[in-house]
Image (tube, rainbow over all chains, first blue to last red; front, side, top):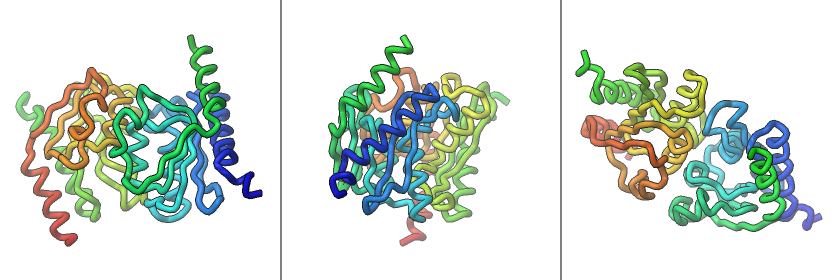
Length: 147
Length: 147
């Protein structure tokens, strides 16, 4: 059971969210936020539906998680996100003081690694590469079909 | 008339928004978004009211402006904001491809200048220092009263 509730388990939940985005012709990126092995927020990219560049999966998940726990600080929470967060989402995650970020696929062009570790809160732990190929494949297929 | 509708005029409208934030015990930061000399969105920091770290004045203004013009891209728009945008807001402004950013007070600790020009869209023009003292004074007074 503990294995089921490891990083793979929660990244699979984030991938499920990414697939929901794909079904709605949104860039397939999904997120879940977890506290004490419980998913308290799940979201996928909705920039097209909401006609709003701020509607990234992470942003919606942060708002939803804060709502759930009744605090805007997410120190005890982990975010699972299928793609490395962009500057906007990294900045939001910094303000939330989130405990841990786990991302699947890397984004060398626009991800946090471009801006350096200081874009995040100093106490936030970062891990990556969890189910990386599956996360990446969804994005590759989406953009291939768009060409 | 043209003088009235210059940068000072719109920054004053942003300062008015910041004062509304102050009245609600929010960090006094305000924003307006302008297209063709018309204010199409105005917002102030609402992180306390909404219990949401993403509710910065710029973020709310971007969402509101996109709603107003029916496009998530704000290429022809100018944002007036009383404080230099943070990484989150800079990232959102980059996604929106906003035409111009004018900010009042500088934020050397957490503002865009910390992360470099590449955090913004390459076509976005940036100006600063408009009514700087007035913008800064609001913030100084707020934090002084908090101590």
